[in-house]
Length: 175
Image (cartoon, rainbow, N blue to C red; front, side, top):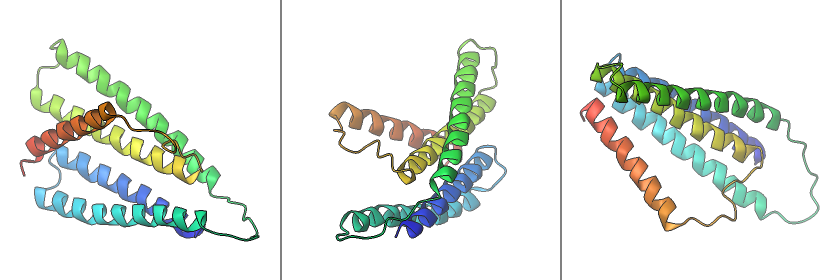
């Protein structure tokens, strides 16, 4: 089952990467809205299926009983490398986001369309990086969300961020 989870996680990382690239190219109007919508639908379906396989496999692995031979997992170094590269991308993209945000606040860059495109592109890159890091941590066996309570404030902040992202994407793509 671990091999299926690894394949599903790898597929999910690839799907998120492609989705991020298509989204960034959509922000810059390289693709038409029809291509972007179909890409979101296709990759979103693949991502949902991958997530289901990953977490369903965890329940199967947790319910095993008996004396079974433990396999040595050789995929953890690959996911660790991907996580390190993605964390670097996340740090760089958030830094660029802060830089362009400051430049926009101080009216150094006044072209609003350019600012929206840069901020949208870097935000997509940062979000995709975060999702990939979480997937890699999951595959490495580091359950950072395990045994943690989610407060009402956390739920509010997450819903607020989702609302902001939804508002941004609907204004950029004009669905």
